[in-house]
Length: 226
Image 1 (tube, helix red, strand yellow):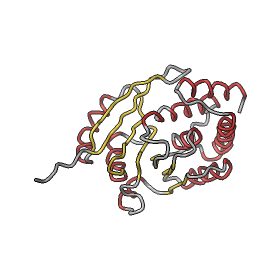
Image 2 (image 1 turned 90 degrees about the horizontal axis):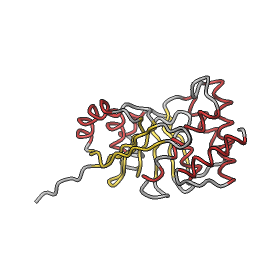
Image 3 (image 1 turned 180 degrees about the vertical axis):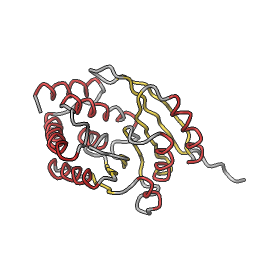
Image 4 (image 1 turned 30 degrees about the vertical axis):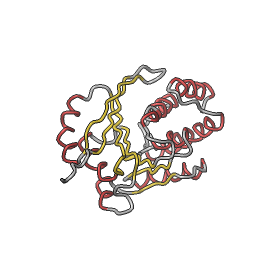
C-alpha cells in the first residue's frame, strides 16, 4: 500500500477518535495487499477498486467503534464479504472477539487467509448463510453485537440478527443517509423480531464528506408477569 494512503488512513482514523499505532497501520497495509491480490481472482469488491476505495471502506468500518458496549465484546459481522467491518474493527481493537459470517466459500477462504497472514487472535470465520444461524445452539443468543455494513436490507438484517443477540446485546445497521423508505419497511420486522430502534446517528466520513447513518437496535424489555 502506498505510504500516502497509509497516512490518510491514520489521519481519517484519528478524526474518528481511533488513533492507530505504526504496528496497526502495518497490518492494515498487509490487509489491503491481500484484498488487491484476491480481488483479481474472486471479485471481493468491484474490479475497479483502488487503495483509496479500500481506505474509505476501512474508515467506514471504524465508525461503529463508539457504539460497541465494551472493547472485549463478542461481535458478529454478518455478511462480511471482504472483511468489512469485522477485520478493520479487530485491527483497531485487538481485544474484540470477532466472528465473520460469509456464505461464499471463496470469500471465506480469503478471510481465513487474511487471519493467517496477519496472525490475528480471537477472530473466526463462519461459512454459512445468515438465516441458518438462529437455529444453531452455538450462535443463538451468543453475541453482544451483530453488525452489518449494508450487506442486507434492514428487514432481513433485523430478522436474521435478532435471535443471535445476547439479552443486552445491540444490533448495528450501517447505512447511507437516505434510508427513510427502508426504515419504514423495517418497523414491522423489528417488532416481529422483538427489537426496538434505540438510536439513530448521522455522521460524516472523514476526508470524503460522505454521509452515513448508524441505526442501533436493542431487544425490547419483556413485560413482567404479576
